[in-house]
Image 1: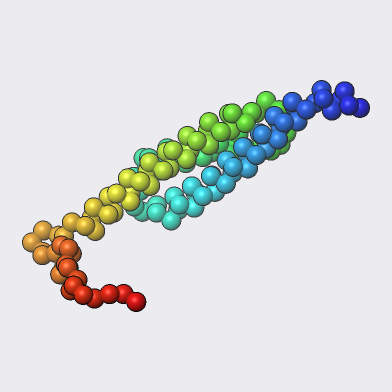
Image 2: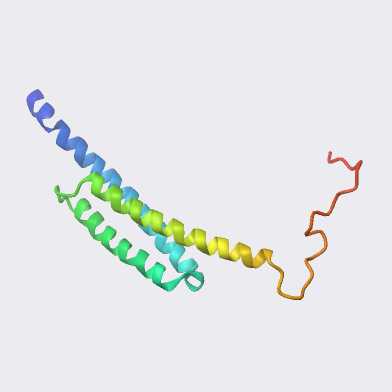
Length: 128
């Protein structure tokens, strides 16, 4: 019995790692899809479609891992999860930068709002 436990210890650990990687991948997929839907009208369609393709591929891999396919490794899942996460982070970072640039730049011909250029507070005021 101890021999069996020792013999299967490595396989059990690999299976555990694959399950944990699949759970993480599933979480990343769900979060990314939610964000894609939320900001869909503000995203570059081509990049968003590319991320959706990566999500589809990752979902298939997760499904295989969760169904017991022993050919799926934690490393495969981690690599594809990282690819989806990196692509989505880059896309959302671009979106947020573009949005903040639009908010910071006043429209042509308009003056910036009062206080936007470093309005000083009167000296002597203290917060309590």
